[in-house]
Length: 194
Image (cartoon, rainbow, N blue to C red; front, side, top):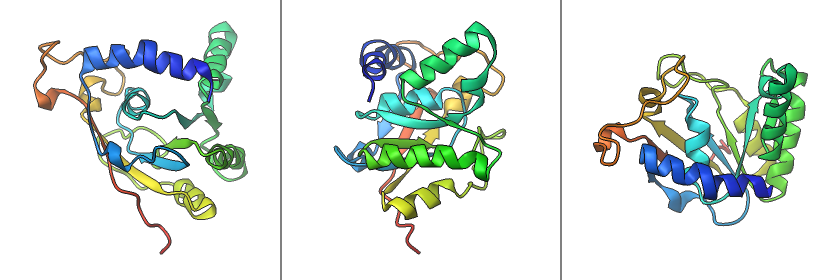
C-alpha cells in the first residue's frame, strides 16, 4: 500500500478527524490483522470514505466512481493522481463490461491480502435508508472466498448532508454528545455461500 496513504491517515487526516468529529468505532475485533477482507458499507455522506479508513488500523482500497479519475483540467488531473496515489480503484458504475475492469482490480487487491472497501448500493443513499445492493460484493466474495464484513456508518449524513460542501462540526466541539458523534460499526463476517 502506498506510503502516502498511511502518512495521510496517521499524520494528517486521522488526527484531524479524531479531534474534530470524535468518531466512535465498534467491532474492530472483526477486522483481521492480516489477510484479505471486504468491508461492505452503507453510504450516507462524503464523510464515509474518510471515516472508515480512519477507523480501521489497516489500509483500505475503495472502489470509487470513475468520475473522480476523469474530471477535466488541472484540478481533475490532480484529483485523479491523488486517488491513484492512495490506491483507490476507478469504477464505471454503468455496469456490465464497463465495471469488469474495476472488479478485476478489486480481485488483485484481495489476492495481495489487502482490505477492500465497497458500497454495495453503488452510490450515496438519498434518504438515509439502505437500498437494494448491486451484485459486485457478493460476486467478489464468492469468487475469492474472502470474508465480507458488514459496516454501518451512522450519523454521517447529519454532519455532512447531501449537497453540503463541508461537514458540520459536532457541538460542543471538544465534548460532543454521543448522538452527535459519527459511528462506524463493523459486524462479524457474513457467510454468503448459500
